[in-house]
Structure formats: C-alpha cells, structure tokens
Length: 270
Image 1: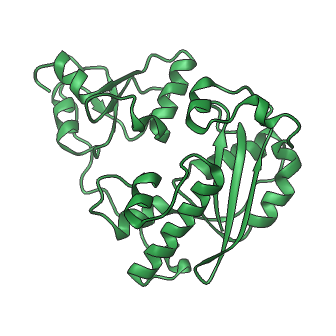
Image 2 (image 1 turned 90 degrees about the vertical axis):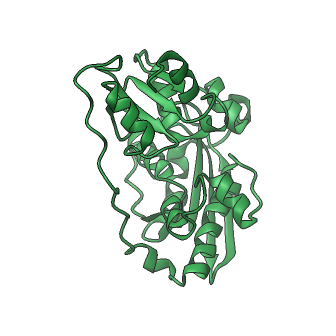
C-alpha cells in the first residue's frame, strides 16, 4: 500500500484529503481517495499548495468517521509514504479524534530513492517522479500516493530488492557530524537549520565559523532556517522543514527564514 495526506493548516492532524493505493505484483490493484472535514481551519498557505478550501469539505466525513476504513487498508501492511510526514499526520489525527493508532509497517520512499538514485540533486516527490517518468499531479493526495508507490516499485526493479527487503536495508550513517560553532562571531546564539545541503557540508562549516550552531531539523528552539539558493519562497515552500518553520512563525516563535544569497549579502564572510 502507499498513502499520502494533505492538511488544512500547520497542525499535522488537520487532514483534509487522503489517497491510498494498493499494489499487487508491482501493478496498481486498488485506489481510494476522499476529502475529509478536518474540523480545523484552512490556512491560506496550505490552500495555495493543494487548492482545497473549507467549501470543498462541507458535508464530508471527519477523520474519526473514516478511521476504520483507513485502518483496514493500512494496518499490518507495508505502507509506503514519501517522507514520514504522512505517518506523523495520521498518528496525530488518531490522537485528536481519540482513535487507536494505525499500526502499519512504514517504508519511506525518500530513503529508497536516495539509495537507488543518489545522483539526483533532490529527492522530492516531483523531482524523482520526473526522473522516472511517473505522471504526477503534485499535492493531490491520490496522485502523490500513486507516485510514492511507483517509486518503490521501480526502485525494486532496478536494485533487485523485494518490497520486504527495503524494511531491512540499513539507513546510511551521516558521513560526519555537524561542525562545532566558534566561540565568537555574528551568528553566536543562533541555532541554524539548513535546507538543501547536509549539516556537515561547506555552508554548515561557514555558519559554524561565524558562531552559529547547526541543528538537525527545525524545532521550537531553532532561530534560523537557511534555504540554499537565491530566495527561500520558491518550490522549497513545499518541504516539511520549511512548512514547520512557517508554522512556528505563525505561532509567534522568533525564527527567521532566509536564503544563502540573502545571508551572504548580510555577512561577507559567508
């Protein structure tokens, strides 16, 4: 099985669409999609991504109403999702709606794609799908679920690893840890997440040399998200870390989102 969800706002529990695709012998055998009333508000940011508004979900069931159906499709099965965002969203929705957790055997198709096609500059769903010739209507839950499943099918064909085999393939260890921050510099006190380069790469070392502490992911204590490139608000806005940073901003946290170009203009040493 493969699954994808879209959410109405920054709360990951606010599922407003789900798509589920079943596979048999590498072929699509089953598809299920529905809009869901998230019982939450719709943010303009999320609506710009997937196009779903509160008007689309009027009269639709809530997650609690659909839990039994979703659980029947996914529980105890190998379930593919592109990143663990969907797993987290389903877990959060179960908690909010007082339903038992969906106990699937989760497989991250991002990790699979990185293993088989390491040469790709990015392993976002749209990039991998284009590379493999998979048709995609990005941010439609059914289309995204279908693409995530097909990525694993094609990866299995190319690598000769059966579906169950991906569950036992070890994750690649990070080549080296993040650099230690300098004791002084213009970025002392900043906790910096980087989007687009590894946390032990050249950019991380430059930021650390200016006193910035490199963190693994965006969290409540993160003060800056640096997006590699000329500007931070292009296609990267769909990234989970970027969305988390925007959510924290909306909640009043002092986290700056900037680009390497903007940061370089501010600090000549970068």
